[in-house]
Amino acid sequence: MQFSGAFGRSATKEFFTIKYSSLDELKGRVLFRINSWMKVSSMSRGISMGDVERNLGLVLSSSSLDRAHTVPVTPKPPTDFVLQFDGSCLSRLNHRGQAGIGGRILISLGTQFWAYSGPIEEAEAVEAEVQALLMGLRCVKSLNISSVVVEGDSKVVISWMLNQQEGPWRFSHQINEIRVIQLQLHCVFRWIPRNLNSIADALAKSGVGRDFWYSNIELPF
Image (cartoon, rainbow, N blue to C red):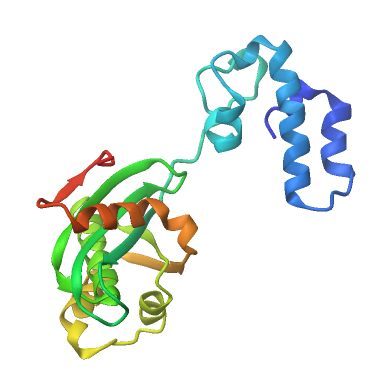
């Protein structure tokens, strides 16, 4: 709402007094006002509406804004990271097959920070998920990240983590290592739907046929 000074008192009053049916409606109204203001203001040079929609916080801390017309703001540095993981298996459910794993680490504001992808030995689908989680936590640890939100679309694996369950004995070695890393980090596990895990899914699928291991800042595609 640091843009409110540019809207004028009437627009600012509108945001805080009118009752909206949903947050999306309020967001749409705010974005409409910002768009109208950006068309006539030199303060918005170098900033697009796409930038505004992706992250208002980043826009407000942009050097493109004219500081003479805004209140100085010290943006809060991100303290949390997000690990998204996924496994892929070319076989029917509960059958072993050619498999791969993948995932990515994001800064909590959504910025790409790290990605990994590669093949594993033949595995079941849920085993691939477990190995993808383990490799992701290994990456988190090696990058000296101490706090991470872990997101995956496997309800089974996330349930094991949330409920401190051991899981099947055949995965016990991997799950035990995950528990050890958990003790060394602050981890929060969260299930997300598949459509929100599409990049990790693509990394896992591309890892199935790859003959090398990929681990780098950039995405491999």
